[in-house]
Amino acid sequence: MTETDIASTLELSRKAIEKARVRERRMERFESTRLVLQQEIGRGLQLYNSMDVMRGAIEQSLDVPGVSASKIIQTCLTAAKNSLLVAFDFSIEDHLDGL
Image 1 (spheres, rainbow, N blue to C red):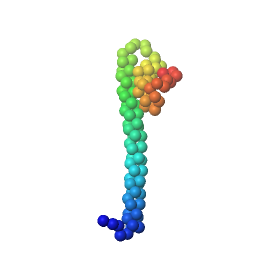
Image 2 (cartoon, helix red, strand yellow):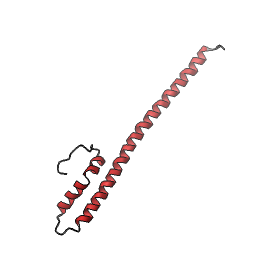
Image 3 (cartoon, rainbow, N blue to C red):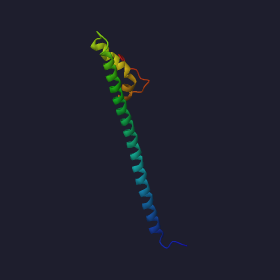
Image 4 (tube, helix red, strand yellow):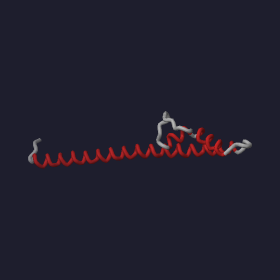
């Protein structure tokens, strides 16, 4: 079996390689977008979790007589610290002054 028209075979090969490269770039963009979305979903879930934790802390604080608003806020932030760090895109190892 021999090729009768090398030029058309080379052109067909070039087009196939170009299509493969385009597909590869699309797959890379898709994977990049997927990773960003996955990170953002995780941050959103941690924000939701921190709100739930703080709601629980507020509910419990309301049963304590004479507790100040600043103490309730401090308790909320302390209880939700890890979730808030992730929600605000900090590493868990990062420390925020005042929490």
